[in-house]
Amino acid sequence: QVQLVESGGGLVQAGGSLRLSCAASGRTSYAMGWFRQAPGKEREFVAAISGSGSRIYYADSVKGRFLISRDSGKNTVYLQMNSLKPEDTAVYYCAATTLRWSPLVKDYNYWGQGTQVTVSS
Image (cartoon, rainbow, N blue to C red):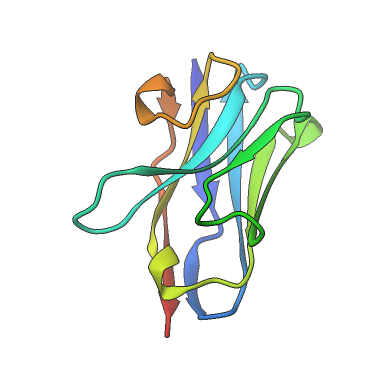
């Protein structure tokens, strides 16, 4: 079992930055992903990092603006979000998968409760 708790969301102006954290307990060596879901839209992939941290993947929409990282000593995965845009507004979820990695929601076994990110124009 894995428990995931996100934090760090909030309200920020366009062009600003936020750092989301995802604290994991239980088995913490899984590959991890960040997803987001805007009102009325499907949950979508944002970024993923392998269990070792050696492989990283981003959605095209956030490439060059967001950075995913993990601190194994703290059992925490981070999502640094820079140059935020109003279209980044969503609930952000972290998730764990037993696969090496995946951009698909269905491949993730464990989910956090989500944290709201709102970007004002």
